[in-house]
Amino acid sequence: MIDFKRFETFDPNGPGLGNLFGQVSPFEALGIWPSGDFRLAPGDGAVPAVGYYLGIAFALALFVYGLAQLWRRRENAILAGLGAAVLAYAAARTVGTPYTAAKAIEIAAPLVGLAILLPLLAEACRFSGPIGHKSDTRRLVAPAAAALFVAAAGVCSLLALANAPVGPTAYSSTLSDFRKLVGAGPTLVLASPRLLEREHGIPFLAWELRGGRVCIRSAEDAGELPPGVRFLITDRAEASNGIESVSLPDGYVEPTADPRGSPIEARVVRPPWALLEIHRPVPGNSPCPLIAERQARQGPAR
Image (cartoon, rainbow, N blue to C red; front, side, top):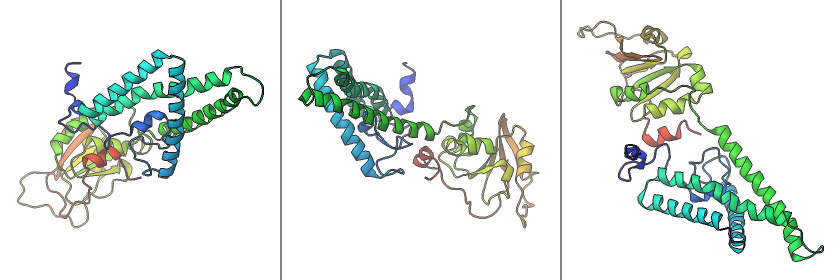
């Protein structure tokens, strides 16, 4: 734990963002946040901003009602847990980082859900007086409110699970090491169609090689070597396969003054990735986009 506290996302003087864009809204602890990406602000996804605000208002009203009922029933354990979660979030938000504040919200979420549902379900299960009595009306409204909250929060959870960029099934730190070698690039990455299409490979590769200009293509449809590219990364262990995957454009002329042999040769091979250096890049401006920190966190444009 002493060593782990030096992790960059826990350093208030560092970026402290991890894969976040900025501070995460504390209203997400209420459970109704209709977005497949919890990092997005209201209105940035497919659902209009009004959908977020209506969900927040509904859940917040139920939460306030739940707190009042918990206080009346002296549910001290739940109230103490909520108080501790509030203090943890306040400390993280004040002297911590957006990453630690998001973790505090995550810890608070199940307690908030319990505070909302427990009083509603208890009211729904309680026997009351004759029809038309005030308490009987609450007993009828409570299960409807609980069912609506569970349905809305459940849909939001399904959106998050369906859209979660979980990344490849296997992970290696090789690409992170390559990032230090290629610097600003420009760099062409040739990856398998499975990685790109089925394992969210584009945001994964963008994150691992952030900070430089990076082109990402399928290894089966590599095409010609883009202008200005100085490095080639392939997910095939044999570097020669990476060379064969791309072709030099028509009219490419190798400078005779350069004493080195092949224009493309292996520099580092660490299966399943290989880094190749292009000694004589194709002339012209590189079409590879700059993968800045925020863009790398966000992944491909939505």
